[in-house]
Length: 222
Length: 222
Image 1 (cartoon, rainbow over the protein chains, first blue to last red):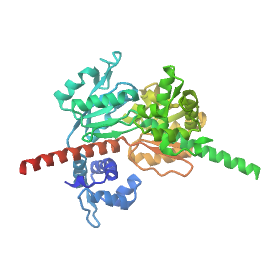
Image 2 (spheres, helix red, strand yellow):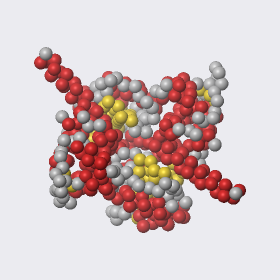
Image 3 (cartoon, rainbow over the protein chains, first blue to last red):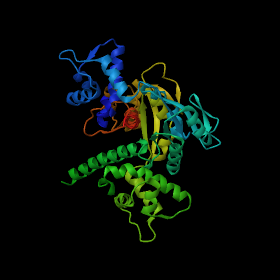
Image 4 (spheres, chains in turn cyan, green):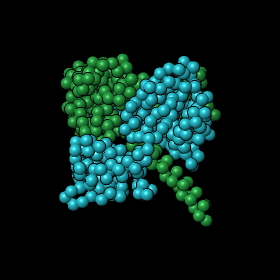
């Protein structure tokens, strides 16, 4: 059981390794060095060696790591060797974009259903799915044994949505609503906040511009 | 200039405050307390008071904060009082989903163009935009004075794409490709990695399940 020891920062980098490894395999490569991986991903070779060591796969001098072994070990560590099914709650802009996004399948995640409470949205097509009414969630989760849900509802509905999903048996929540959810200890919560990321980008950009302006002002004065 | 001092963790929370404040304003409310904001967002009142203090707006005892003043100050601190135009490079699944996502407008971001090098994608509609060939980027940026670009190309093309964008005059990059980009000091870089978020969720969920399984095994043994 190697992954019980793998630090989460390494886990965050595993999907990037996997993508490069699958590309190299497609190109017919058999082995890869930590240095090559580091270059492809803008990491230091030391970091890559540390991350790869946590998979339990050992590299050989002059040969490097077996690409097949690394793919197998990383995929298994992430649990991506089994397809994971997930629901999306909320068929607004973000929920619809996530439901229609095919890229999730690359990491073993399949969005199998999308729900909303808005009568105008129910019945509409989003990607390959049809928006279902929220009052069908409980039955859906119990019939289909889904354990992961993506929350894409407005902030003020997110906690109630999470509570309801957990009652229905959901064990993993991926929250895209801009709110800190409270969940019981046996539920895993991951948050992605696009607005927060953009806020940092906006403010940093303003600061750079202002610094520049101030510096120019100084130049004129002195 | 209050925002030169605002810590980035507070900046990350500003969009969430803004959303609640706009909702309350729509409902006709004039004032709000730090405690109310804290409850809506799952934060501690102490954290909220600290964040709001950084905007320069002061609350009044028993009355709280003026919603209008807070909206004005936060919007201005984020630079969201001016519409920011951005390009998307890469019209694959993620780039297309981001281009079609209307939610960005809520925080002053307007996606004005999307580019790809794939002849099969050029000319296709994505949301309200038409995919343009990458060799038009330079002219587009210079004619339209766009300073922000969203990178949604494959990992192995991301650094070259970033270099090219910076040469064309882009100052802020929002990178969705799973790679650490190297950029000059005067360029602001923000990264969002959906696969990394999901990797952590997957692994944490596996760890919880395994703990449970092990615990059940122990029960049977003892």
